[in-house]
Image 1 (cartoon, rainbow, N blue to C red):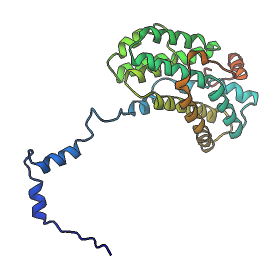
Image 2 (tube, rainbow, N blue to C red; image 1 turned 90 degrees about the vertical axis):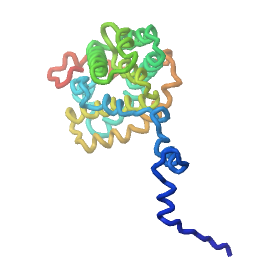
Image 3 (cartoon, one colour; image 1 turned 120 degrees about the horizontal axis):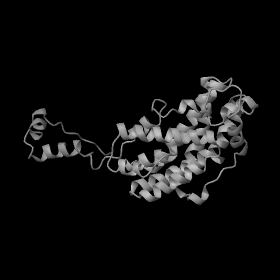
Image 4 (cartoon, rainbow, N blue to C red; image 1 turned 120 degrees about the vertical axis):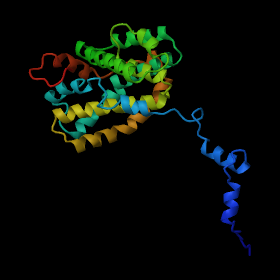
Length: 266
């Protein structure tokens, strides 16, 4: 039989070993454990993403439905199931995937201060908008996002990177730029960006269709694994992989321009 024996250590001895003398070995040990998470070694905080990609951030996302308003009137979105299917296609086959690719390339360019590459990615993102309304949607949000970040979340190199984008700024490029300059990792940036996109569209659908908030929450949860998978795939893709196959939604953006009653700008 193996007997385990413990030895009680007098409280006075422990107090003495942890003296106030900073040069004592015990004191150094305690300080080392307390200071192990120094700022230099600490992981990058993701708090900016939590702030930037919430409905309260002033980009005006509430004013756009990205063709959902037309889809509801046309009967494509009728309930929770059809909403999930519609958004899943937009995410994996449409603008969600393309915007994430653009955000990733903007992130890389901004992180290394390549302002020429950043401007080229932005010009491509603006040119790829399939209609006037969707161009307005991405550019209004992009410029608003960039202005808000510059005003409230300054960082070295942010103003120089922003100055490279003259005129219209696509929203995914603005997000990628800000995250890259702030040193935020690409993977969580893409996850947060894509999930925020889904949440904004679900919010619009709840206001448009006979879908309650609980059903909308289930749709977000249903699409979360797809968001995760897409965010993992995006870093391996190039600008040559840009493309969309959601033709009905793109055509719906044209039809929305002449829709008789509208709550949204797209």
